[in-house]
Length: 115
Length: 111
Image (cartoon, rainbow over all chains, first blue to last red; front, side, top):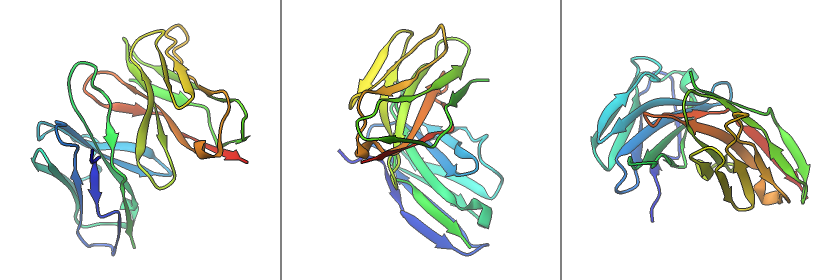
């Protein structure tokens, strides 16, 4: 079975440019999560969706960040304009809600470097 | 609010040594507890889980027991291998599907 797919795996961009990260969750999963990992702050939940609807975006750092989930098999995280402090590894995870179904399956991550 | 505290790393051991990584949590009610592992350059993988008090999760020789009386979920392995070198995260979840992560413990196993 295919796991969570993220693209690109690595992204290097210049400050001020728009960056779009993509995620394909595991088929059949109805919840999707975006995380950011840095050495200083560890793992942070940015936003999560349930049945394509954003449920909690309180972790989104600021208006430069936006996330969409137009359908059950695709989500994007966009940063516009990007800044050097956005450099991090961004993970997407998915899960299937249901009784005791709390396991989240993580993608391999996108390493973003903003110069 | 809910929180997880792990022993600080990094932890360096020799192959075949006994491993313990301490984890304690703060939560109201009855959270589910997990250990996730992150190998170099990869995403997090679920290692084991326990959903109620006194449950023991186990996988790949690792074990952890959900101790409500001490609010702990310590990770143990009797004989570690070089391939166990990774970062280990203690995690809890309680409602609303939001995982609460510990800070992670980097483990290095030397041959």
